[in-house]
Length: 187
Image 1 (spheres, rainbow, N blue to C red):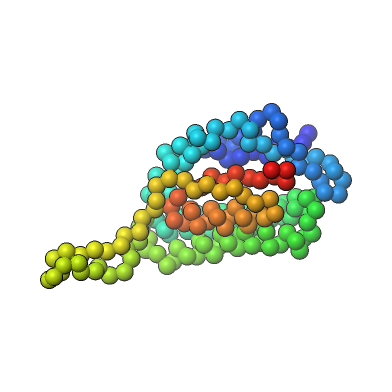
Image 2: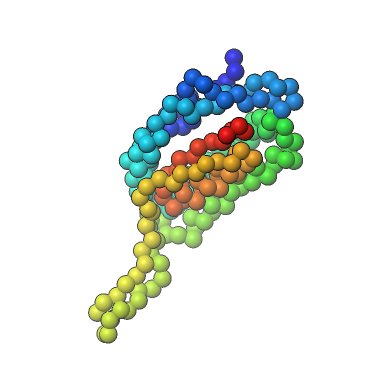
């Protein structure tokens, strides 16, 4: 039976609707997987991201979010041979796939290491206070906090791993969830 690619949405793995797109082996034409987002309620997905994902990420410190990225990078690194095999079936050589697979995972590691540039708290106090009044009775200071909302990305077909990971790594480190719509060749 041909596997159906699932999407992690609304806190669980789910397959799309009844009219999936066939993903073909570039050499044999064999159907290797089915992909589909038909039937997903994107308004509800965004609402879930705002209601559940955003508050959870905003509560985490920069260090916790960075360690989360690092753990994801290690998890994906353990599975990279599976990605190489699938990429080969899409028509790419190992050398072709290297930049996508290793580059995407490396991007997670690089963004995870940026946590050290920030305090172990959910926000960042930028610079020194600036006096705004004579005698310093009124001052201002920048406070960088995670934004509310959800980032939305349409992933590129040509770099399915790197493209997604480089985008979401920045979002997650900053404390904002992301929705990524995967692209298939015909879209």
